[in-house]
Length: 99
Image 1 (cartoon, rainbow, N blue to C red):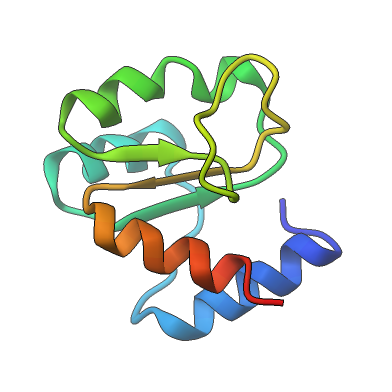
Image 2: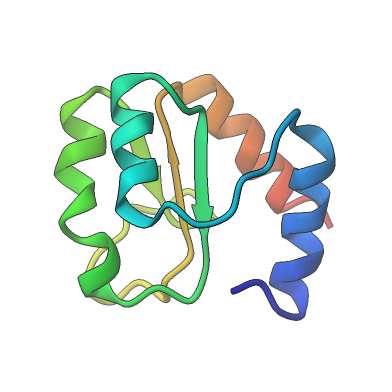
């Protein structure tokens, strides 16, 4: 899922967190919505992978964007960050985009 520059960005974020888990797919987004998981970050997704998750995250007062902090939509390139806390989301974006 993480290749090239995406892998470098993910590795930087991975070093900043306590635990990294792989897999889980949409279940992980449900855990974020319930407040049981802090972050979901993915790359190389298609609209059918993430569009239905937007109302789940936003409906639980979380935030879901691309890696640059833009709202995701049908034209997004498939990089997704979902988080239940807006301040933590900002920190994640800083780590991802720290060149």
